[in-house]
Length: 376
Ligand SMILES: Nc1ncnc2c1ncn2[C@@H]1O[C@H](COP(=O)(O)OP(=O)(O)O)[C@@H](O)[C@H]1O
Ligand SMILES: N[C@@H](CCC(=O)OP(=O)(O)O)C(=O)O
Image (cartoon, rainbow, N blue to C red):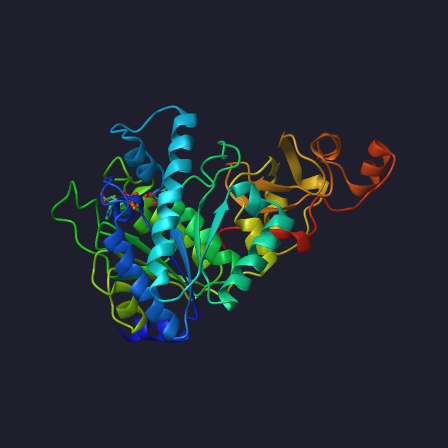
């Protein structure tokens, strides 16, 4: 209780994510009563001085219900068509429900590509914070209709964490159909026990969490536990709780312990480091030797001499991954040379780089100021 109270007293900005099965009543169509209960709670949270961003799944499930499809289609374009139809129903239901409280809503559809591009990322941040200052409730979903594998986030638990980091929220609440994280999937393990509190990022929870228990949800607990780890990078704690508990959000905000709290005491990474850390897909990879691993971990820049291999095609200025010889990610950062040049200069000392290229653009392949060390 103490811990919850402290986290929630200090929390000004909250991101809440609701899953498809909750929003669409297990796929039967938008659950307007559930939405009415949540909007009433959001109105109360606003009265308590909190800002709320709402990440809502359910577009595909609602689209299927509207189109009369009983089986989830396999074809990408049919799924995307269903999402386009369903998203209308989802935002319409929220808008209508919030009218009762004279609260405006805004639809925001994002893809990973939007968040990976620095300019679009900063724009999204600016727009979201402007909406919050206007007391508007942003309703966010992935832009399912246009995403391809290369540009998608993939699930809304992860999207919730990315949004948490984007706007520096204090708490991420993931509302689902279970009362929290259990020691194993309670659908198949009736003996499983609820985890009440833990450390975000502790790998024991990744081992407990399974995939989605129904065909409606996408990521199951696995993506929720990983979302908590991701949100902790900006210093946000995560609560996983049932969206069906009466007044769940208000009671949480009053400091009640409900569901699972995955807390963090981590100091937030700088906004720029978070942006790099939150890239889910990277264009390329450098494999570095042990000496370089040690240097990078000490916060030094990465020089060409420590690089053993260059994988993928990338341009100067793109964010790429740096791994050790066991493929463990050590850091990532903005590279000063494209992949072709990087291949030519890997393993070389600075004077040899000049000889090879005929010029020296920068001594470092990745400068320490443009780098974020991972898993520290
Ligand atoms: N350790 C666990 N604790 C609780 N639920 C789990 C666990 N492992 C897997 N699950 C499953 O995760 C499901 C919730 O994820 P999902 O279906 O993706 O929901 P949502 O649509 O809310 O994101 C639960 O219904 C449950 O079957
Ligand atoms: N963007 C998709 C939801 C993806 C997703 O992560 O679903 P869920 O696991 O139910 O939160 C949709 O609106 O159908």
